[in-house]
Length: 435
Image (cartoon, rainbow, N blue to C red; front, side, top):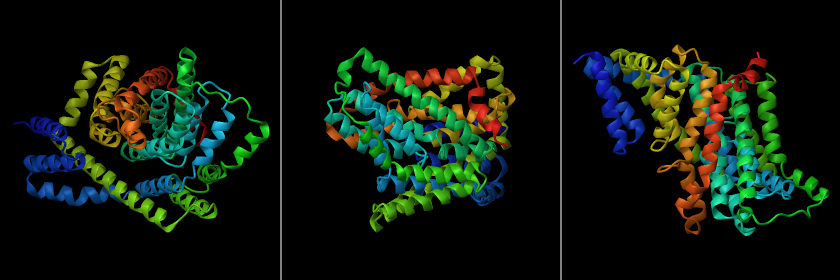
């Protein structure tokens, strides 16, 4: 068997292992190690396993991941985001579907201190869904809106997906964060449009509108937003003001979150320990998958399978539109069965050379890729955000109802991807302003 044949066989075995529910990190490491042994012998295989994990995890930029995760978990467990949702609820109370729109803006606010779409959905689900149920919102609109609003967490910085992508693709994290701000705001307002259109077509989806809120009540509500606003100001002010780097921003944000939670009286030892434990567990899981992806990259490079597949894809889809449609189809399909980070790390060794050869901006592609991965968080049968919301509402709402609730938003997501493809400068203009 040729070297390329060994590489392709390894990829086929990897797909089978993932299909039978072998943990993706274990599958990546196992196939890569076995493939390197087959290709180069045991000495090279053991050498790769001993060197590559250290080379990857010793990257200084990766130290920001546990810090941003800790920032998000502290904010979630100490309920620092509740004031953001309450303020949005009061200011938007006169709008049709105002509570649903408030949950979208609340999620965008939480995204600015989280970086995780799952944490974003869980936090907003606990806060916003009971409020919408109280005001007789249709369960389909209430749960669907919060499930998709959580996906904003991967676009608006800090974003764990963007950090990992930046490390692997060697793209500036600061530039990715700025591009993510634009795409995140586009997504936020796109979701608001979806809610308004749905309620306009079917007013019974959101029957209650409160026009009696006074201006004084609105001003008072803004006072509750100070915890998140202070953390956001500290992170983004220092980051884009050149006070500290994106790597250091995670630690600064985590410290600020702990300090604000302590001052506001929300911090307890139990909450701190729970947030720390969840941070450690999530970081460990992410690094195992990332190390496996690094080993797979080495295996594909040595076998020549990566170049073979990349050149094959470019030959088949020489038209940029066809190539983009193919990439969208691949990630939508993978999103139905894999979690986003696993899907990204599994495919980047093959996709990045294709994107580079097509002459596309790796910065722009990182934002589009993140958007595609997050659609997978709300598509059946896996749809992790949907199941997070299901765990919040319990038996009150069927899983099928939540999936029906996200359909309109998926259409909007696909439309926005089309807009980003047609006008890449929408993503690139803001990073270009910052040297």
